Image (tube, rainbow, N blue to C red; front, side, top):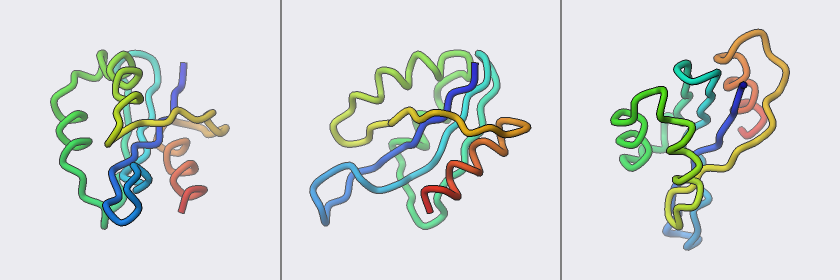
Length: 95
């Protein structure tokens, strides 16, 4: 089952977690693809993704979604031939 998540970071200017950090896609239990926003470096999300085994990412995202400072928002996947294309399409829509 394909999942697409928008990863957000804290904006000190606005006092809310509204900075777009990346779009993360999951297919099944072990396939994941992430597209980072080049100008938005966020060590929280990079550490979370780097230290979580792919098969545990889906369960972890449900917990991270509730974070007050670096949440994730799940969106409906757009039709795409593969996971990377689905993530890129979502990122293009956001930008």
